[in-house]
Image (cartoon, rainbow, N blue to C red; front, side):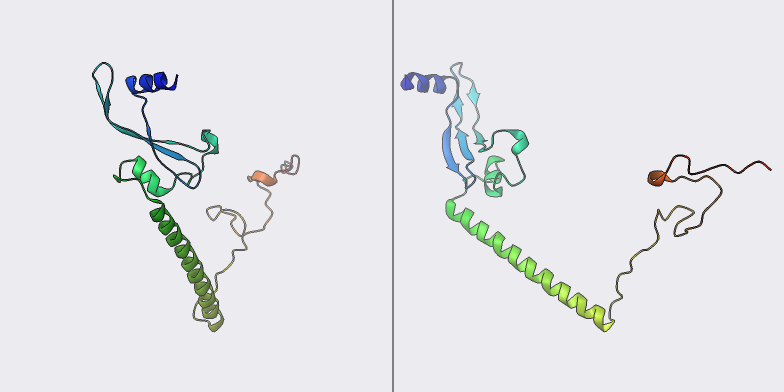
Amino acid sequence: MSRIAGVLRRTFGLVRNHVGTDHMGNKYYIIPEQKTWTGRLVRAKRMVVAANPTEYEYIEGSIPMEWDAWIRGRRREPPSIEELRKNESNRVQIKIKAQELDERDLVLQAKEYEEGLVATPTKTLAKGHAAATSFGKQELSEDPTSTANTFQPGSWMPNPKK
């Protein structure tokens, strides 16, 4: 039975060769260039069978960038395990160095604030939008104004006619 299935797959162009698997369980295949039973030439294709086949479970980074480059044809050969490990260790080192640099920058910034070399960032106490005429003012007005999210029905009463 498997021999018949193999003949049918080759006949209808469904042959795919397993190239590799990444650490997340995604499997990568190549469908070589071949002729169909009608004589039509079908060019080679690269494909991935995701470990999570449902689209809504896909998150960025589900496919390593080395494999993504191979799938999109930006590289000829699939990535080796050694290359993947080396690139992952480089990424970890870069994250550690970036974190150390951020910590040093925060210490330097705090030191500059203490010495008065840099002005401390001011905090805005005024509420509302800067384009509004009442920006920063807490005056009550007899004129109706927009109260947006703070509106309470019946809180404004028109002036009695004189």
